[in-house]
Length: 344
Image (cartoon, rainbow, N blue to C red; front, top):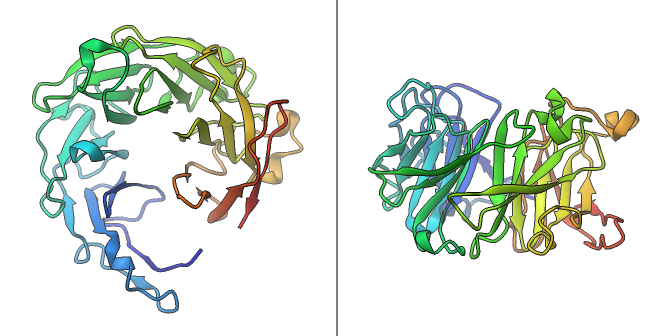
């Protein structure tokens, strides 16, 4: 891993910024007030030597900047690259005109981002995934669909018209404490998705009453009547956070338990989750390994990771220890024996 440069925050310092890739650009949101959405061209990195890394100007070195947010802050940024737009979610305050819902950002010209509208029907949206629908529900074929993770529900939106959005369904579940984030199993055949709840372990709610992380499995073959069909429980006590699915594996950042990689290939045939297994892990907070259950339900360790490098490397960010780069050395968990990840 080579250090090439740093893009500082746009306004005041804050521990967390959310970054998404759009073509050759980084789209960066933050919960800091007046930050807005930074749009940075990654081509600027191609001419930098790692021997002389560069600190970019947080404003002058941007391709574009989106500032049309109530107070300039957003919890997260979502990208639909196929349709050339982004979404700011969790853009406080909740009593603004968009009610901290989905605020759309037209990225057709990244140097001049504008907003065509917002979806405020279900209030605050913490995270989302927006995709052209190619699932089995014929009524919504080729529609622009957003799966919203809205604190106490999975809320599914039709956002084909950004000025006339609608809620298709809003569904809660046993154990709902803070519906946090999720991902569809297959973006080209949207039949199932995985959902994580950030507070059910700490609150000892529903299936997570024992403090072991729960990955909720949803059948979304009917967008109007999605149903939670089962779940997978981790073998190590912790809090689950962001997860992303790639080629049948869910890569999850589970705070103190580190990166956990789940084999979810079995879900279409067995949506109860009974056949899901852990294919690998990398513990970045070993201080709690001696505790009952092998860990604890506190907010330490890792929030997120990036598993999409074609090389197979996985980038893990952590709160206390900077970043780790790891790679899977095996994904065989047929006998419930996890593979491993090695640091590189």
